[in-house]
Image (cartoon, rainbow, N blue to C red; front, side, top):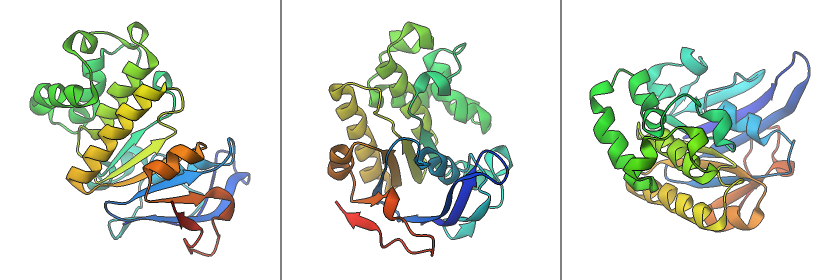
Amino acid sequence: MLELRGITAGYTPRRPVFHGVSLTVRPGEAVGLLGPSGCGKSTLARVAALLHRPDAGTVVLDGEPVRGWRHRAPRAQRTACGVVFQQPRLSADPRLRLRDIIAEPLRATGRRTDAADAVRVWAETVGLSDDLLARRPHEVSDGQLQRACLARALVLRPRWLICDEMTAMLDASTTAALVAVVEDYRRDSGAGLLTVGHDRTLLERWCDRTAHWAELTADGSTTAAHDA
């Protein structure tokens, strides 16, 4: 399981964004986190993805407490999580071609020999043609770039996928296409999904259950997560 227990987190000392939030995602489960802009959803998603160290609380990944964050997290835990952010242009290196963006995790983990085949497979999966793979971010649309970012998140075949408002900047057809990719991957791999957003209709159609931010408790329970 992916367990967030009593998480308090923020970006400046003594001024956390939120206090004592707890949430659990089980293997194969899709959990939506619904809340207004600015409430702290994205910060919690970064904690879940091992990208932001909380001020208090514990993250437990597959039964093991997380003790390191970002590059200091053990490789087994770091590679167990894939993450897709809301704004692809802020999460992709503008100097890289799309094929290199997708291959980043493989190269970072020393799997360069697998890169070409894996990039080809995942590019096809997310709907990117060969000519698009040769382009840089400024030469493609937001939707095309987000497809590459989703492929990058999946290329290591993570057991947990965190989507932080992945579809917020996309049109309806691209949203449907990317949600379908995530659902196919989840069905085939048994991965758990935490997806953050403020679109109630999308989350309740997509997810097995939806946790409402205002109802998350600080006592370690997850009873605020309602079936969608």
